[in-house]
Image (cartoon, rainbow, N blue to C red):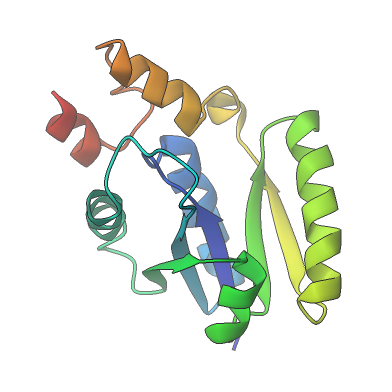
Length: 154
C-alpha cells in the first residue's frame, strides 16, 4: 500500500496546500495530512482548530486522513507505515531546503522517498506565514484559504 504523509503546521491551511494534496490523491492509496507539533513554536490557532479545519476541508475525500505528531516527521511516517513524504515547492529556496531534508530523511528514514509537487503559479506566492500576517492585520484572506476557514474568520 502506498501511504504518503503531507506534514505541516497548517496554521492555517492554505489553498496552495489543498491544491497540492488534491493533485497527489491519484498517486497514493492514502495520504495522511499530518499536523506537526513543535513546542518551541507559537501558533495562531490551536491544534484542535487546525485539525477540525483539515477534517472539514477533506471530508469529501476517502483517501485522505488527518493526523498529528510530535518529534521527527520521519519517525511518524515509520509509525504509520508511510513510505512516502509529500512536499510542495513554490520556488528555488523551497527546493534547496526540501532537497536537504529529503536526503537526510532517506538516511534516517530507511530510504523514505520524498515526492515533490510544484505549486501552481496561482499559489506560488501564498504561505501560511503570509496568511497569518494578513489575519493579524485584520485583512481579508478569503483568496488564500478554503471557504470554510474564510467564513469562520469573518
